[in-house]
Length: 266
Length: 266
Image (cartoon, one colour):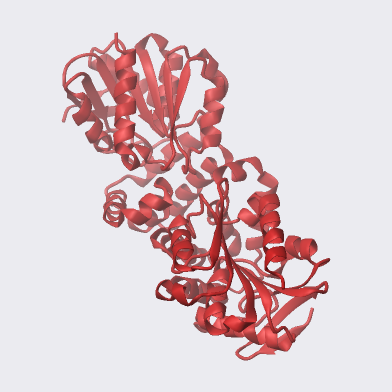
């Protein structure tokens, strides 16, 4: 996988397929592999690019505080490096917070924006959960304990109970001891301090908002604010899901993205 | 408040009103004060008894392991002491697990049973969460540190976000450092080990099962398991709530209980 310099951070990325570009930005606890199902589904029609965010996978660590604005600059620099003028951008969770600032800083680069499990500002229960997660990591200093104390908020109860193998996979993935703890702590703070509440009106790109009805991390409060604040948006709710509806309701979410890209591609 | 001996445990209780007896059994993290709104609402029509479970409030500690059957014996012992032949029983969470064993041991003493956010067997998610809460207390033996990791699970995201003062009050309440940690841990184990699911078919008492849609501890999985096995049960769903629907949807919960008790009165 190639690594390119994007200013403050070196970024590891993959790309696959040809056609109009799609840029996929993962969340706080993931890396580019979070997108493998989407890459497989879209590479026959689009040029699909997925990266490890700074602080994840093979990209630079985030060993000092960073803001979502700076991470948006990193993503735009990656597009520069790859000669991508304009793209469909999809951001999940922290990736959607970054995507909001991409719309504000470089609207001409955004063909469409998808905000999956996102929010203009992390709400009270989301803050509580992020602080709990950071605390558990500080108390235990290992990812395995963190994973067992975190996985339950990412999926809805019924999904958790009906899919023990998927839960074991999630715990193994987010329990990977190679993950950088300092990066996580910094990015956790990045999410907590993100706030575009007063700037939603400036976001003019066509925007797809997707949310899980039962998500406590990015709850319906933030979703409703995004839907009300971004004029050129449509919203799809995943009734049976929590934060991971891209996996929990995989078929519906993939179809939603397929239809969205088809509609928004010039 | 009077304290009576019921064999292994001394029990601290309150009673108010006159009429047919209604016995209220609280859950793992509470004491009899969890029921004050119900005591106030029901005392004009019923003889209402609420008590501190063993391990809570001013009742005996649970310094050695105890199962939900032992707690059922203690509660039946309390009924003996109070001269109550039979009662309508309302148990929330672990209190509902205790009620099930009362109905199995002494069916003639349980006129009806209401199970609020309860379980006959914890589902995988419920067992994980109770195990996590037990583990957090081992890692950090401080209720003040424990409370923020527990309270967000008890209410729905919408309720948490909309009621910051109440959340602070609940957090302060469960942060009370006089609670006995050994009792808590033994009772958490009792919850994890409680398994009356395959015996629910023996319970002929009319049973009301109430569940919160967002409850991760006693999720719809566990509610459905009980409904499949109980021969004489009806179900009420609290659409907007988690584990604390008696508070989150207080008016609906109270009228559901009042209707239930009236229907099953002699």
